[in-house]
Length: 273
Image (cartoon, rainbow, N blue to C red):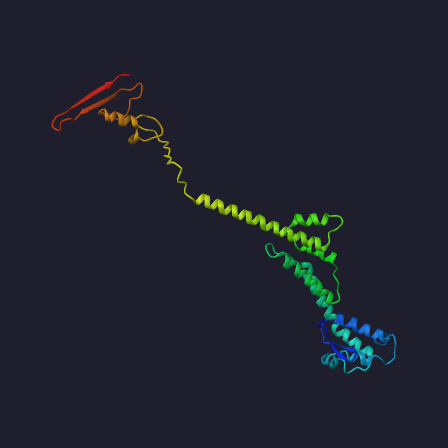
């Protein structure tokens, strides 16, 4: 039963009582009732007979009855009701229509809920006497998801014949599933990459850092004098010198012999180039 009216059973007939909301629904029902009795022209003012007044006032709740209690004709009652409620109804309908046309899908939120909310606004407008058909709702739905799925929306709009509301809804739900699948796969790949980079490589051999300095002993690049194999070799032979002579230069070599702590000798030689 619509919230706009209260149906009271009186024998075989049902009386209609307007409770002050959804005037458009009440208007359709009371007009049908008055037309059925041939009295609508009286209420609309086309007929001047004083009939239909009782049906009209008995269709109102206490608040609305008090509002029209100072008038005496069916037309006056009807005009007061129209003045009181139609402007308000028009404003309400305009608000809901604006809400429907400006609703935007939030990426990541449930698509089914978004569609259900738009369906709810469609039904709300229908109860208010303003009909939005499914074809129009389908176009509005595409507009609402354009920012989230621009390519999909353009494809749907270019189809011939135009897709139905159900087809658009199913495509949007499928697109949502595709996006979830891509996001899940990417997150899994990122997690695996993080685990790989964070795990120490135990099998990797130690790699000595390459030195770009020049050894002042052997004059080669890539190591220091304290680790020079030529210097170590010479020291093992008892040769102590500042560096290996460079071609074209004289170099004094000092040979030491220290087998006995109390005695020894030093031999100095000169390399001739």
